[in-house]
Amino acid sequence: MLGRMPGAVVGLVMIAASLLVGGGAASAAAPPHVRAALTAAVADGCYTWPRTLSEGASGEDVRQLQIRVSGYPGSGSVLAVDGAFGPATKAAVTRFQQAYGLAADGVAGSATYAKLYALQDDDCTPVHFSYAELNNCNGDWSGGAVSAAQAKANALLTMWKLEALRHALGDQSIRVTSGFRSKACNDAVGGAPSSRHLYGDAADLGSGPHSLCTLAKQARAHGFNGILGPGYPGHDDHTHVDHRSSRYWSAPTCGVS
Ligand SMILES: [Zn+2]
Image 1: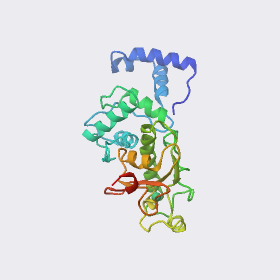
Image 2: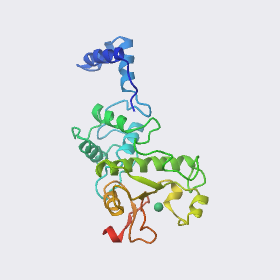
Image 3: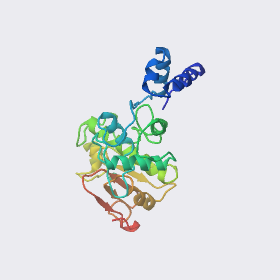
Image 4: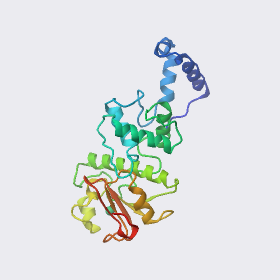
């Protein structure tokens, strides 16, 4: 989220913005305190993109963008989070822009970043989900099938996909009943030995504003290779989504396969 700015700083930003009309030379010509105010105005508590990104770009800033638009890969697709801005990333950015009523050109600039800043908390999770919600097993993400850091990163990607799913279903709440599990936690609940919950990328969704079938059907459009729901053994009381390496969808009661 963006920090709040005092009125005087907002005024300086407006001056700086007017200086910026005409290009980078004007920005460089701005007094240092004005440039500092401009920088402060766009600084986000989690991550601030340093440049406009379009097809052909590469780098860590592209990877950060891909994480946040990973829920917009198109039906049945999964967006690679590889730091290379190719056609699939452009299409995902375009879908994200369309979903939020922005000019949809597939180029990530100030309007797109402003929406992303509004959608993320200072710990980089999307505003409607949290690390705590994705881990009711332990506090440090240890003991799974991957490193704690990897499990947490996997859960972050899942949360951004869930944020897209939530928005597509009218911004009504989605309840995560189980996320990351250590081997001990997985054994305790009778999870499969190869469960994606051990990797941190799985989320079990309970019914609420949306039926389990609505969740299973809509999840197909938001980057989940794994979807298990009603009609699949053991899944009549939740819909499970994950990032397994190849697609496996099974919710026979819902017509999802
Ligand atoms: Zn599950």
